[in-house]
Image (cartoon, rainbow, N blue to C red; front, side, top):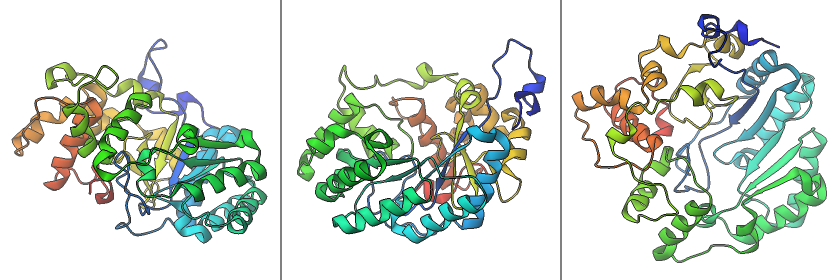
Amino acid sequence: MLQLSDNTHNRTLARHEPKFKLWTQAGLLLTYRCNAACEFCYYHCDGGKSGLMSVETAMEAWKGLVRIAGATARIHLTGGEPFLYYERLLEILEAGVREGFGGADMVETNGFWATDDAIARRRLTTLKSLGLQRFKISVDPFHQAFVEIEPVRRLARIAEEVFGPAHVLVRWRQYLDDPAVAPRSMRDTAYLETLAEYPCRFTGRAAGRLAERVLANPSERLPIARTIDELRNDNCRAGWLGARHIHIDRFGNVFSGTCSGIVMANINKAPLDRIWRDMDFRTHPVLRALFEQGPTGLLDRAIAAGYQPRPRYVDKCHLCTDIRTYLHSRGIELTTLGPTECYA
């Protein structure tokens, strides 16, 4: 297990300054492919995406996290929809057991595949036998536009029987009991009501149509739209330094928390523990701009490339995603702004 003093950035700081925290949790994005295309998806997943994380990439990420965090390391498997590739999911879990890591902390799914009791029970029992600790089911109006409720209810019921209620997370349970199924013409209303109850970051696909609907429907229960001047110098320093959670995609790209599309490093080029040791957000122009100034730090370059700022943004993540999407579409900073799957 590493110490805070092992990081390059931390060694330059005074005792009282906030340190770059150890990464203790990693979500492995097995695929960007999903049977849904939710309006709030941070990673822009949908059925048109392809590709799958290799067992080797998954193990490299898992081993690196263990070298960083020791016994506190927690891996969860997600996507996209990992159950589109159930056999690969099993291969990764089996490899983790062979490496002596025990089970993964969690697997996430939208539950579309639980079409009968036998399938659901067999798969859940297998996952538990491979040491899986918790099971998470995504349930909300965004997913319910694509996934029928009965398979999800079946999965939640059987998961609680197999893992125990304390080890099953339903996000969010109120929509399991009372689905927010609405005609297409009424979905915007349902989405806005959900956002008022459960706020999200406006990054990924959420920075598109969903953000536009929020801006067009101001409410005391929704985020207050802000101008660029109001967002100026709202930097990412505290969020990035304090993020103990990363995501790693099938290409080996490392993202901080849910900051999709901002590639900090790649585990195919350096081991994860070395990436953490060497991480200093001040050494790369894009990362430094966000770290020190926030999204407005990218504004001058975007405007020079033709970007036209909007009158208002839902939050700084909306501004950041809007700018980055424009730069990516112009082929600017593709090493850091990627992969393409996160932008289209």
